[in-house]
Each structure stands twice: as structure tokens, then as C-alpha cells.
Image (cartoon, rainbow, N blue to C red; front, side, top):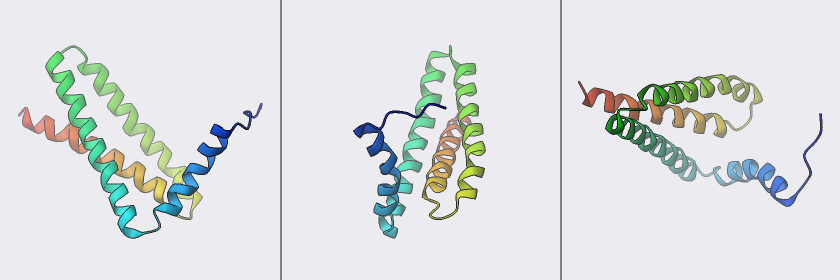
Length: 112
């Protein structure tokens, strides 16, 4: 397997996860970050259903994308659980999944 070239961008991207975990050691920062991810995913879920509902053309494609995202998030949970340590990545992934599903379901109940 060929390794990627060690550029400044590559090194900064590698260090960004550790820097984010160090920044989120404060409980208020962690809570605000999780809330931002939850609300952003909720807004994306609302936007997906609103746009596809207005166009009435991409409903199956949008459903496939949403199901694929949720399945990918579920499959990424196990490696993040096995890593141990600070579960910030796992919590961010869960908040994104919950927010997206809540946004989709809320618009689904509006249609009933």
C-alpha cells in the first residue's frame, strides 16, 4: 500500500482530531459542539425533505441517501467503540444520526 505524501495539509488534517478533542475537554464546549452538530443535522434532515417534497422528483434518491448515511453511521460506531479513550467522535456521529432522523421524521409527521 502506497502512503500518501506528508504535506502540510495532510499533517494538519491528521492533527485536527486531536486538537478538537483537546478543545472539547471543557464540558460546556463539548455540549455546545454536540448541540451544534445535532441542530445542523436536524436542519439538513428538514432541508432534504422540504426540497424533495417540493420537487417531487428525487424522493427515492433522497431516501436512499438518508438510509445510506444512517447505515454508514451505524457501521462506523463499532470501530469507534473499540478505540476507547475519549468518545467525542462517537458522540458527534450519534448526534448527527439522531438529528438527521429527527428532522426526517418531523417532516414525515407533518404530512400526515
